[in-house]
Length: 515
Image (cartoon, rainbow, N blue to C red; front, side, top):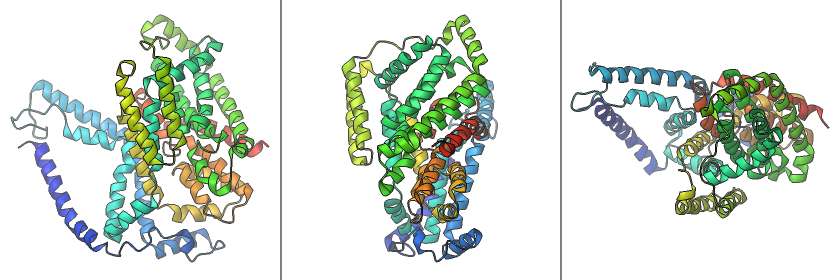
């Protein structure tokens, strides 16, 4: 019997044995019954705003010990994201050793083998390490740990109640659908032609493409949603910039700038950026309010930050143009094949418009997505293969993140309520780096004492910090999924932080000093 079969049977046996007590708990409705509210409502804690923060946190842990468990698991997941590059490197080492064993036809005791005694073509250990090294899989993996811990502490009924009633998976589903549509060949060609018309002002040079994608793309996010803008901008950057092999320093500066610009670029409207969506209804913010308070400042910040990086790397643009002239294989201006009829592009843009219009109704946009897939199949001769793996991985990432994020309010809320305007802006920016910025602004809506100045500060801080890490803003995983192949060991969290730091500081100045 091969090693994989033995291992898989052992895993299935362990899972089956583990499931028995869970089935018993499920049948009885959970150890504590599904009627127990979990997580505990923030207003139910018997603490005072005037109490020291540490005392408040200790009191909330005493009132609900699982608060600490959930946060420790969340922190472990964050630490895991910083180790993914190292895990992927280990996976490559394991696969290289396995390939060497195959080449020499030498069977070592630790080598995976099939039933004939010959080494398997695929290293099971290497594949597992690859999965553990996928950034998009991290929070989903630790969500399993969280659910197991919650089942042991509260019972299966509480797990079901939390997932069904307390966690909203609309955004992850929306991102999967809009990312798949935006990456289709007709939509991408349309976006490329739009960007090309702007880049033609600079004779479609590498620098002109770079500037148009990083300025126009994020602003479009206010109208086609940030996830769609991120997908299109990242795909265009891959072809017009990253395939020309910029230096690692320039590569990280660009992805950091992209993430920051996308995060603030959705603030022209009240429906495109996830952190704005969370507050627009409760606080009555409409499109006019967003543009007059956020949009024009975001545009100035995007222009300044992008111009600074352009000046810093202007010599590298020149060297990339020189390499392009001597190496025809690097020609990013090459045609991508036969044109697409206008009516097909128009129909697929209508599918995207429908998805944005019903973005808060999963049954509607998932149904529309099924029709989109049918249309893409019917017009397959004008389509490229729709690769669902990247959108599904990004959706898995976001689903895991919101599952964890729903249990972090116990410590985020008291932190926010104890800050004045400037500290709140800084605090929201910092907290966004370790939690999705939409979660930060959602928790702010639960604070009844927030003044207009504090509301502005928390949202400005949340969108400003949206590029610091891959988990800071919902569209970031989509961008990383598309661009990570251009980084030898994947996108380093520290490299991304370094690339996003300067644009973040620029945006901070624009939001806090202008108007």
